[in-house]
Structures are given as C-alpha cells and as structure tokens.
Length: 237
Image (cartoon, rainbow, N blue to C red; front, side, top):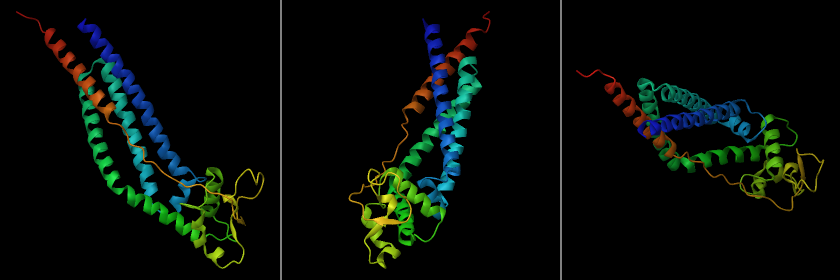
C-alpha cells in the first residue's frame, strides 16, 4: 500500500512539474512578445519608458528559471534522485518567497504603475498631430481601433490635444469611431466626434501560491521515502 502511494506521488509530482514547465514556457514567450511586439499598446509604452523593457527581461528570466526548476523536479521525481529533489524544493521555496515579496510590492505600487501608464498615454494624446506619421501615433490608433475605445479614461481626454484645441471643428481621431459606422474608413487622423466611447480598465493578475506549496509538500514526502528506502537497503547483522 505504501509503495503504491509513493508511486502515485512520484508520477503526480512529475505531471505537476510538466505543467510548471509549460507555464514557464508561456511566461518566457510572453516576455519575448513584450520585447519584440511593435503593433499593440505595449509598443506605445516602450517608446516613452524603459520600465517595460526591464519587465520583459524579468518575465524571460522567470520563465527560464521556472522551466529549469520543473525539469529538475521531473528528473528527480521519476528517477528518485534526492539531490535533484532537494534543489527543486529549494527553488520552489525561493519562488514562493519572491512571489510573496513581489505581490506585496505590486499591491502598494499599483497606483504608481497606473499613473505612469496614464501619463505616457496622455502625453501621446496631447502631442498627437494628424500631419505627423510616427510609430507611436500609428500604434495608438491601432489600439483604439482594435479595442474599440477612445482615450485613456474616456473620449474627453482628447480635449487636451493641442491640434484639436486650436481647431474650430469638433473632430476626434478616426480610430475612436464605431467600426459598424466606418467599415473600411481610415483609422488615422481626425474624423467626426464618435457617438459613444468605452472606458478602459485593467485588473491585475496575481499568481496563486498553492501550486508551490503543493510541490514543496510532494518533494518533501518523496525525499523522506527515498531516504527511508536507502536505510532499509543497508544489510543488518
């Protein structure tokens, strides 16, 4: 009965680490996407701040570290290697501590992050000029057209635009218009005021720590079983 439970624990730990390996690959890919993306809201932030580039390297590092940790856990669980399981346990504990610290910092810094993002977008809106053709403006037009939004908080953000303030016409960016009204119309420059708008909202995603705690418990159980088996194999006189 005991050996059957250990086998179940061993292969469950293997599947657990396989899922973690896939998660690490996703995080790594997300970091690469942030670094190379040139056609979404990410590129708008990159043009005005280096924080996002640093964040992409952090994602890539976390993803690679998670994949390495999961690989060690898989090998240690299947082959019952106590050394690898010990390293895996230490890595999981380290990740758990880092997540708690990062979650605490993020909780207290959320307002500052949103404010910085808002300042970047509002500066772009104020300086938006239909006669200029640059990547930041084109990307923001693309974001508004795809997300079906207008401005950072509402379409009234565009009342601070320098070109619109000096114009006698009531116009707003074409990318703000309802796509049902302009199926093939332009998404750059200024058009007539849209009839409605949407409000942007961002909900932060938090990583649960239950997976790390489960992995820690499984690795400890497997290590203790391997340790007891090693002593049981010693010949008794």
